[in-house]
Length: 222
Image (cartoon, rainbow, N blue to C red; front, side, top):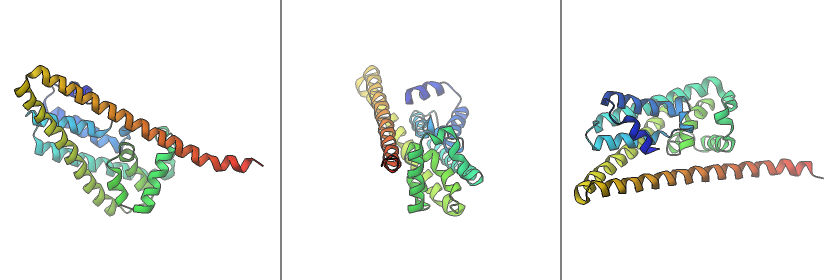
């Protein structure tokens, strides 16, 4: 996924790249794009491009943080307006166990759940709308949304930035061919880790749904 996005932005004007990264980060929670395209992919690639001098690191951080906070605020307003009807959306309804887990997290942790949810792909897309649906006060939501957005953006952007710098140093020391090979291995490792994480989340969700269904079966049996 990282390699695909990097290929997509290669050769584009910097202004357009900033806009694309901001749009993906914003849409993750505002339009529930996070179900199919995790926003950290965009900010990681942005960090790599910043290490190459294509983008300004400080400007990238500011734009990404603003997009993350604004997107989550829109998601909050959607949840506040539509409430439980959001659960009927297909992209959300098929993740019932994750939705219930997020709702329970909000009940137990309140606004802190918004910060925690920022670091899990599905929760990042779900949490703002569920916070709005649960009528969590917006000032509290905004505070923890901002803190989570800053921490998340800085962590993943700098991760991409330092990875890009490491690639450049490897290219200088060992030759570009070997450096490209190492980069491919790193990308494959990230993809494998991401796939395994999503499979594990899906398996945990399925097990949670099965556990929730057992009592209803027992009630039917004599």
